[in-house]
Image: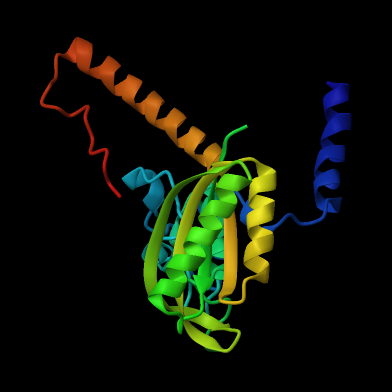
Length: 111
Length: 133
């Protein structure tokens, strides 16, 4: 009992002192509060396109597939907007970078 | 030590067909003398480049798949760097990725077979389309 009371004040103090983690680390369990400028709590649950269609190999050669995940400016769209799962996002990002190197996709286009 | 590599390179657009053939055959023979095997050569045709490379807006894309060790690719890349018509190249190693894909496919196939046997092929629901791409 006494141990519990001793431990509890230490824990929250420790969490406050810990530096804020990267934005993507925020757990998505339930409404975490409208921190994103008045956006709704529950976005329609986006599913990873690759998981659904069971596409395993993301090739740097199919520009049409890759271009869906690239903004007009040429930037790679973050996965919170596209709903891609992490392993696929990593592979997609690597493929986009390879395609950029071989001039299939631009590094930066427009503004 | 048989690694599979894909070398994609861009040749300047004002190349004549026969010069291109000569160039490709030179590269192929160079690969075989270095101890590798050329699996395929695919000419992907003329494409518009996403950005200007050496003052060219278009280029002829060629994809060369080969099997061999590291030194084979090193030698090929050295050649490509020196060759004047080649304006860009990219080498990707594909055997590891292929291994992973085969493994995933095998797991998926075995799972499907297990589903089919006791269910005695119930409406073919356990057989999703394999050839998606």
